[in-house]
Image (cartoon, rainbow, N blue to C red; front, side, top):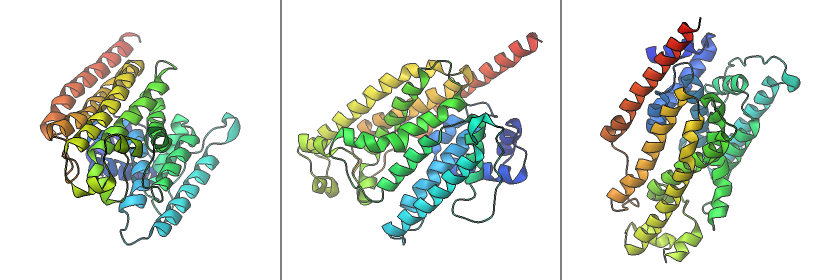
Length: 331
């Protein structure tokens, strides 16, 4: 097990060996696939990080069923696998959270089953932080939509999908980030949507090769762009204007979400601020690439990610030292 991962688990009081292995599996998924997400997580106190890794692991495994698990599986078999895995997860989650506020038994790992490596950690995270299961149900519904829905006519239609694919992920995170105001979830919702829209804009070409378009059809019509135009890979004036419009819409959501960062516990703010800047930087990168997203995947460079994250890491460490000093002085 990675030494940093071991320290995080010990700091979180996660000691049972099988449960530690599950959390470590989630951490490995985050490190391998969630470059920006994983970097931002490093700005949290060690004891909070395993729970964020677990939530990422859940989302990533579901996404792998839909897109990456096995390219030979038909849509029907993927749907069956997602349904079976999701139902098993929800049944175990409900069993682990009894009604009436009773003590919650920590779920143990068990052998076999699809995605079993990540589930004990996810179930434990839900139980520890009392995360509503309807957030996970909404997420699974949106993942199922990816197997049958290839586009959305209006922005409102798209938001029905984004509610489950991204907004509820922000809501899942809120308890771990320790909000200081009841208004925080509304801002977290908008931030989750903003992150997703940035990804949609960056991944137009990649999504199209999977048969999907996440830019609303009414936006395409407004700028005279067809799916065939996007498939051609040619970024002409119409496509540039379309993407500029969608970037402006995403930036408005980033602006509306930003005030929520200060409504989080001080030890959580640098994590979310870093994610905010880096996901917003995707939109800047698309513009710098002259909107060339149909045949390539633009990215925020490593140097830029470190420029944003390193000062945040220093601030986060100072904040944790300050809290420990005040705690010690008060004894």
